Amino acid sequence: MTMGIFTRLRDIVSANLNAMLDCAEDPEKMVRMMIQEMEDTLVEVKSSCAAVMADQKKQERQLAATRDEIEGWDGRARLAVQKQREDLARAALVEKQRYADRARVLEEEMQRTKQAVDDFQADIAQLEKKLSDAREKQRSIIHRRTAAMARRDAQTRIRAIDTSEAFARFEAYENGIDRLEAEAGLVDALRPKTPSLREEFNALEHAEDIEQELQRLKNESKPS
Image (cartoon, rainbow, N blue to C red; front, side, top):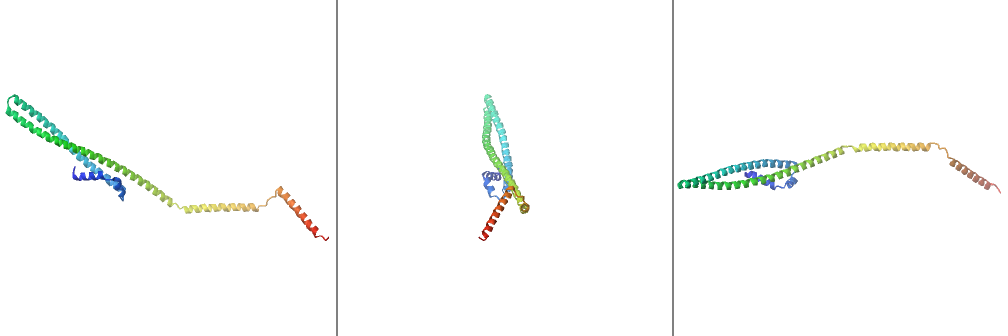
């Protein structure tokens, strides 16, 4: 992995996504840029990991071939000893040792390569987790923005409605009803009423009382 990729990966993995978005003037733009950066870095990291894994496969093939050479030269040394050719046996053992040294070097390289692959895979897992979190955060931000815009539009439409004119019409309508009710009451008050039977008897009783009172006054006024 190049130093640039390593630095970006380290910064991304260690970044506090929520804190960065809280400080951003445009969180949606910020998270979009972060996702793009993560996706680009992930592609590069996977590419680097694939290259190291290819090296690992090549080393495995080289190690297998080297071990075959070790066995081959060991067999030749044994054959030379059987044929009492110590010179050839010695030369074969020298070759066997040379390939054995090569095998040890390859094994050490393979161990380092395996560790590098493990590190890459761990980094990729971390980066994919960060990317998943960022995408989820992006969905949340978009949802919140959509809801906020819907509320804003609703409030705008509500404020745009001219309620004063509507209430004025309601008031005028109520005033008209009040006038009709008042006129109905006035007509009812002016309409001649037929006295009830009780009212007629009460009138007779009152008239008799008045006549008696009138007679009493006349009597009192006569000279004695």
